[in-house]
Length: 312
Image (cartoon, rainbow, N blue to C red; front, side):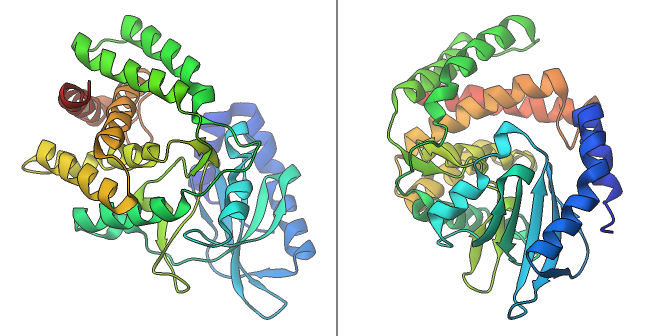
């Protein structure tokens, strides 16, 4: 049976409680059944992300390398295979097989290194922007739209602003709310990756870089640029000129993606405000509490305020 990585077990149980424990108990059997049905043999160390187990395999037919990914059953994981199917390997790994009932896929295997290992910030933003441009194709009917989240985002922002300790000026919160309201009106059905950060962009042989772990959303592709900047917060923290570097990253991404720079910046500012409130309520995966969480939330607050002055 496939061994489950201890860290994956720990974080799944911590996040999902009894439901997570029950799913983990059946997961080795699920993987064994998929290996047999899809005629694959395990090859190499079992990996994992935040919500999914990733088993490197070799396919019996032709011996091609691949991975079987099985995700925890959650609404946020439903449309990942739909996104891969739309892209057909253009800018993303190929989808070979899917089992939607088990939240499982057989995917093309990309490399082990990611864009997060690239030190040049301009190159990170450029690669992500070029991929975003390629992924921004018409979305099929049935994918969730960013606009469907707008009402919930607005309600949560107002609730957080009232309940969570913060020092955000009124104009900063107003700028975030304005972006949410703009998202509610933006109904163009364009594919959005939904989790565009450097660790989800892997080196590959078929193309230099391929994306993984999409959410499969429709809406404004500038959202992905905002996600990229938010996830670059730790790198910006160590910069001698973080605001300058943030604006530079936004500009490089927007140019490569063929998007309006100010629209990308508005999404970044909103996502930073959301991250600030989330971090103060729940902590982050890399810092559940303590000084590191406070440092991250304090920086998100500082950067959101400054981006809000330009985008509000």
